[in-house]
Length: 207
Image 1: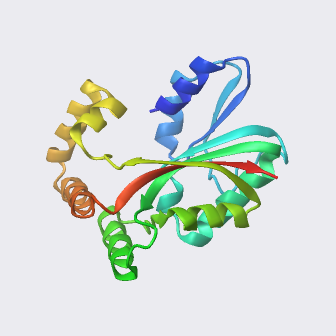
Image 2: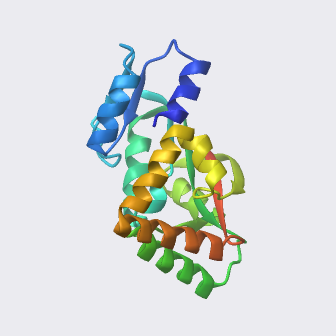
């Protein structure tokens, strides 16, 4: 939807921006709404962006690494490190698990049930795992923030998508039984592990 991008552009419009979107339909939609000559939406994978080395001051990524296997997470972080300038900032916003000493069996159950409901290899991590993965890629951790994970709560959907689109989404959910089953399964997992699933926002810097 370009919500995060619109916030960034309101704060600083003198820079040039590149948006990376894997979904072709979403990339085409964003290209119509974010169409200033200094802004470009690229329909490609985050693990192989194609930009030159050390060309970016800041990279922000939202709700994407969680859906990747750990080795894919590392590939994407490596690509980000490649295109960031020295001293460049990297911000991620992802699903996390709490507390830090969460029982191994509970952690495994959440990862397995999340993957089964979302139908991708979703692997939320505890804070130290996210931070250590970033450090391994060459980043220095600047700050870590957390907030409740309310992705599928109605008020949050309205905030993210707007009222009209939310109504359309709800209509589409009930009009497509398979998708409805998948979304309700996801919602059930999030509700079941409400005390263990959180959202981490981590700001890191390239050495």
